Image (cartoon, rainbow, N blue to C red; front, top):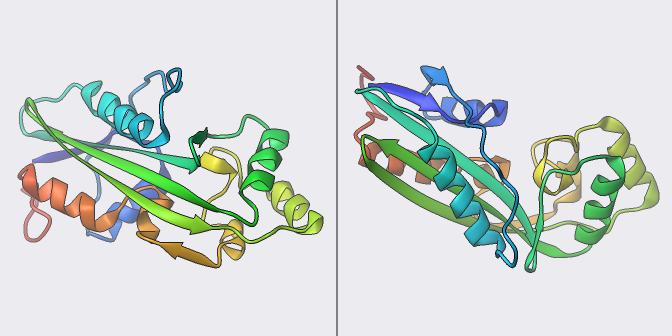
Amino acid sequence: MRLILGSGSPRRCELLAQLGIVPDEIRAPDIDETPRQGELPRSYCIRVAHEKVQAIRLDPGEIALCADTTVALGRRILGKPGDAGEAAEFLVALAGRRHNVITAVAVKAGDRIWERDVVTAVRMKRLSDVELNSYLATGDWRGKAGGYAIQGPAGAFIPWIQGSFSAVMGLPVAETATLLQAAGYPIYGPKS
């Protein structure tokens, strides 16, 4: 059985490695991730993960795994910032407040899809101008939902979470293992 990872994220590969899994191939689907008018963050995240896994063509004996991570400040979706100015805007909005990080996972084998989403509450501390500008200068905000990654330098800004640390990184490990097993992928034991 071959595992196809529908993501170019190195973090997702690292998190799969915690389960002893190395994807056989990476096929990141190219889908439109624009939120729909009035779409709520959790619904958006679930839809995007579902559309990603549906976009991957599978050969017999292949299983696809896709995920999407969204930062939600109330009903507002904070995607990947386009530039440092937008990253600063996101971080200023998050600073001193709680927000949710939603990660939806979808696994496809044959015509069947297994799905799960995980919502983690995160609190970011208030940020001084020096902290904010120093962080922006690292460039770590690039390609990160909400403009930060908990496993990077911004981890120093996160004193509290309630939920799954690995989901905030981009892939809830326990839930992913359960979905893969449900789809028939052997997590424990030989992968052939």
